Image (cartoon, rainbow, N blue to C red; front, side):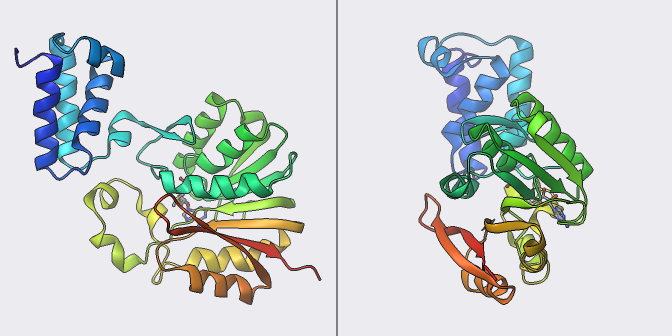
Length: 283
Ligand SMILES: C[S@@+](CC[C@H](N)C(=O)[O-])C[C@H]1O[C@@H](n2cnc3c(N)ncnc32)[C@H](O)[C@@H]1O
């Protein structure tokens, strides 16, 4: 089979990505080939001997070379599917992770239909936009310190049809926020600063530092959120935060010290506790 036909290209790229250390070389190669050639998965199956144009070949080669340098497929393509919807991803935003769908599932169980939600550190807007799309009667506010991330969230909100129910505000945690909310959510940066250099290159070199570092022990954002939340949470309201590995006791202690009652531990698909819920203790 000629070397520029789909099946040969796919096999060669898979080998290159495997050698470069990708955990999912076959999937990566297929997604990059589909995007470079504008083809569906069915096209690849039904026409494996179809040739690519020189332009498509050049695009595919550049995609594979970027993936060999550990750039995630979602960043090469500029988009990521999250909870069944496609989000634009840029260098200013965290690449939303499947694990973060845990906080979505937890929120949907407790959110009233017409919930007012607050998403702190929204990045692409993955959490706030997904919840607004799932709950057409809900409204929300989402914050980020990064104006570039907020621009991406704005674009995602418009494309996914929730822009008229989402207020996007720039600033640090609660600083730009006004109002009272039925549910406060955050997937804050939670990696201890000293551990960032040891992360995989796919993360370290491509997710923005602002989205990763949670200060010396990784817990600074939880301290800020816990100390500020009571002023913004309605009576009987819920607070949900994503956490990193091993952070359950520390994060629960931080919220307990601010008068919140533990309101649930939620596991991701890998079985790890990924999200903690808290309730405002009634006075
Ligand atoms: C781990 S990312 C989460 C992004 C998105 N919520 C998600 O789950 O995909 C953390 C986000 O917090 C933002 N951030 C960092 N420091 C912040 C601060 N002081 N105030 C508000 N947002 C902040 C980052 O820019 C980043 O978008």
